[in-house]
Length: 292
Image (cartoon, helix red, strand yellow):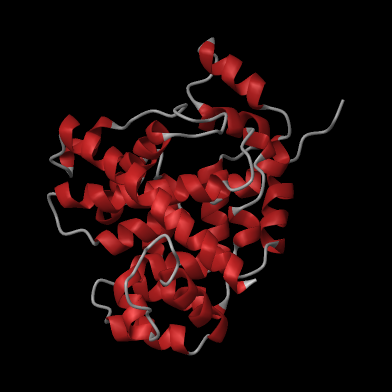
């Protein structure tokens, strides 16, 4: 019988994952603050020739269909938005993780990035209904990163998907998280949290990664953000997913403590996800191909 990996094996593997690029790391630090200036974003991009080229090729892609070509970074950042600029830098820096085949979740290559992008768009839309001030850019960035732990655990779960789904159906386990913990000693939220610490991500992003399926456990100051990502993740799975764990998690109904949101708002967020993600994906893909 094949010996299953231990918690120590997973933690050791996390330490072997390359650090983010300086540009991606800096952009995430800036985007996590409420008082940042767009000029800070522009300055980081201008100092990175590869990122500059990628952004210009993305914004001028056929998918966006601009009448006049954008030739300056200032205009490119302004058009794409700071949140997507950080996302592009992150995808470039950690594309081996975001675009890998998730064998442990029966997910095809690129599934994780698409799910994260759908979550980011949904979380951004959810912020409109928050009862406290919540940055839409921060929610988008947290959504992009929230499920990164699945890229870590996938290699260790092997062919466990059928087993986990059967246990959920028979109520032997509560949800997919419990199944991951039973097999490996940790779930993907903790694996993602450990990676976020290794990457020295801002605490707000670490909390969104760690508690996006259990937002009530997050420190109070971060709960609005974590609930936005929690709802965004559910909406993303509702909008389409090819992984075995899709909709195998519970909705924390305490979101009503932080959001005035109706079924109609959820439907509108779903519509925005379906409309926006296709355009963004096409533009990113074209920009990526032109940069290679």
